[in-house]
Structures are given as C-alpha cells and as structure tokens.
Image 1 (cartoon, rainbow, N blue to C red):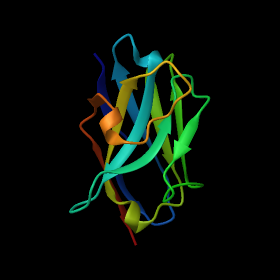
Image 2 (cartoon, rainbow, N blue to C red; image 1 turned 45 degrees about the vertical axis):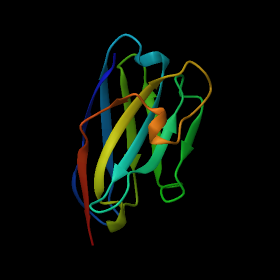
Image 3 (tube, rainbow, N blue to C red; image 1 turned 180 degrees about the horizontal axis):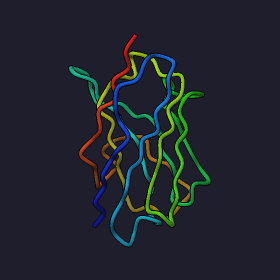
Length: 126
C-alpha cells in the first residue's frame, strides 16, 4: 500500500516556475514507478511525466517536453516535478501516481497506476 500527498501547487504568472512534490508513505516506494498526470476542467486526464523506480529512465508528454523535469529521491520517499516556462494551458490539477514496478519501465497510461494522490492545483495566469 502506498499513500501519496502532493504539494507545491499555486498561482504563477506565465513564464514562471513551480516545483511540485509528491510525498509517499509505505515501504515499497523505492520499487515503484511514478507518474505525474494533470486534468483541466472539462478535459480528460493527461499524462505529464513518468520515472522508473531508480530514476534512470524518464518519459514526458509532448506538451511539456523540454520544460518539465521529473525526478525522485528514494531516501526521502518523494518524487518531484520541476515546471519551468509555464504557460496558461498548463493550468490544471496535478496528480502523482504510483505502481509497483521494479524494472526500467516507465508507465504512460493512467490505468497502469494503482495509487493516486489527491491532487494539487496549478494556475498559470497570462
């Protein structure tokens, strides 16, 4: 069992930066693949970024590639999403997700994940 709590969301101007954190409880975090997703009002949940258990493999959605960076610190049971050059279209609730996967795989589809946080709001003003 893994419990996830996101933090770090807020209001930022276009072009600014935010760093989201996702703190996990449970002994299996270091063997979990992690992902970030987002959902804007009236839209489907969208894949943002993923990282494998060791941090060696990462993968990004096309809309955030080159602007966002996912990372993790297994000693702190935390995964991060550094978001730079933010745009108004990045406005959404951001969720982190986990699935037990002790391989080099990253997971893109939301149905691959077993555990979800409650989400944190990110609002980018123009």
